[in-house]
Length: 346
Ligand SMILES: *[C@@H]1O[C@H](CO)[C@@H](O)[C@H](O)[C@H]1NC(C)=O
Ligand SMILES: *[C@@H]1O[C@H](CO)[C@@H](O)[C@H](O)[C@H]1NC(C)=O
Ligand SMILES: *[C@@H]1O[C@H](CO)[C@@H](O)[C@H](O)[C@H]1NC(C)=O
Ligand SMILES: *[C@@H]1O[C@H](CO)[C@@H](O)[C@H](O)[C@H]1NC(C)=O
Ligand SMILES: *[C@@H]1O[C@H](CO)[C@@H](O)[C@H](O)[C@H]1NC(C)=O
Image (tube, rainbow, N blue to C red; front, side, top):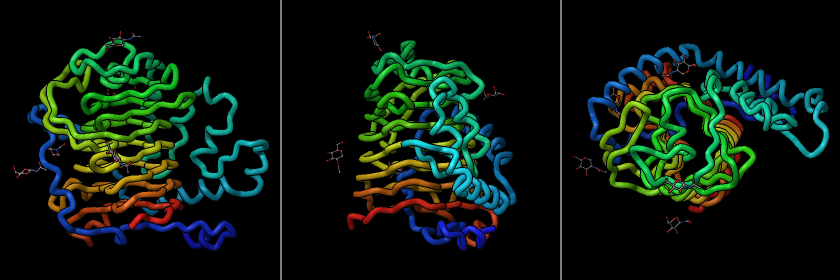
């Protein structure tokens, strides 16, 4: 299958990358416990772990082959011919929704489009549409209806959209609950000021938003779900921080200039696809696996595809941190496909 693709006139390179960027160095000494409400979050991580185990595929090659087949199908001349006019979508994910006239009225179609290890991600596909009308982020414990924070902490599935262009300046990390889609299509949405935290949850899609200038915060009382809020310690100022979570899809997200990593995936998070995104002006881009002593990170399957690693990036595109390399090779897989890498700054 792989050979077939490589030999195609498109010269798309496919490879399962599990070694190239592996460094067992102590990249992640920065990962101390990020929560004060320890018991609560430990319980959530524990629950999340069973979902992660279930989401983990023991035959990653099958996932790779399926991905390759999808790409081939999306790029054959015959299928390209179906689309006329200015809209071009040449990868299987985009082709599923992007050139359709009805994307705005059929937003949830997006939930059928993801490929790679995150292919079962539906986010808030089972929920109602929730419209963010208020860009403010003043209330950490009782967020006001209409704000982004109110939407993401709800316990029910929600498909979150934005009423107009807006800059949501977060005052503390934004803790996203299960079964959510943040869908910025149709508006220019910027999320700044603090990180988006995806911790101990399943089913999150983040799509078509700009994420930048996330900075550290010392923490405080923050709501994470309808039923619970608690004391959070320092947040690092990542762009998106994914911990103990599964079925996560990040697509068409533009990210730059955050204080820590742009996307960090740690503590046994799996079934993740990061696609069609654009990363610029940043030092530590992506970190997969926080600590070389965390056995959770043996179970980590991530597809990184069709992204643009743009100007001004320095390192970690991505970086894998693991302990026992050879065990890891059979158990964890990172699939990196046709990403464009611009000239680096250093
Ligand atoms: C992590 O915790 C250790 C021990 O408590 C401390 O020495 C270190 O400064 C902490 N690191 C960060 C980045 O907070
Ligand atoms: C990481 O996972 C372990 C075990 O599942 C849990 O005890 C711990 O609280 C988790 N840490 C974070 C930061 O999620
Ligand atoms: C937005 O929410 C804030 C509180 O978070 C409130 O003060 C403000 O009036 C709201 N704006 C609108 C237009 O509802
Ligand atoms: C997420 O949504 C699905 C589908 O509606 C539901 O079965 C599941 O229980 C939800 N998960 C949580 C943790 O609420
Ligand atoms: C990144 O943002 C900080 C402020 O948060 C600013 O001081 C710095 O110059 C920015 N860096 C780049 C490369 O834009």
